[in-house]
Length: 189
Image 1 (cartoon, rainbow, N blue to C red):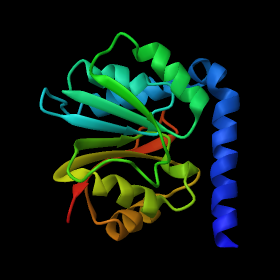
Image 2 (image 1 turned 180 degrees about the vertical axis):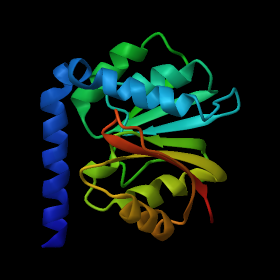
Image 3 (image 1 turned 90 degrees about the vertical axis):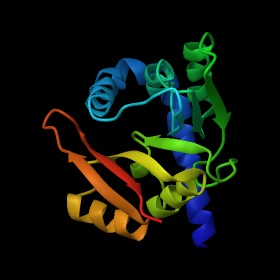
């Protein structure tokens, strides 16, 4: 029964993002860019970084980071969001998109030096599973950039989740004009 509920939740999220893909950027681009600018003011991406944009949506963050990183791979469950990402990134050699579930990533160990998950965690049925799956594909020194919707998570819940997921909190950004907490953390195991 729990498995049915899990997949029903995933299908509803995929359907919602497939249906809103055409309007997503018009609706959320400004908010997303404010988050990206906050992160890019703190985290440096360089020519050695292989970045996972987990829940990449229309590829906004991928486009920003691809100018600095060695490679950016974006994954998303929504085909329509990935179509938008493909259009945005078709001229960017260092950006690649993959259709997959963030709870079942098709990557080997130690691929990613940085993992970003903007506007993903609140949509996942079990955020800890999602984080562990990304950790499997990341290096021991990976930096994680996670956002948590303020109306769904409080800072105490986030800290508990990070401990459970074996991530060390490095920085918390709680900007009044953003709907999300931005959490910077690193692997602890």
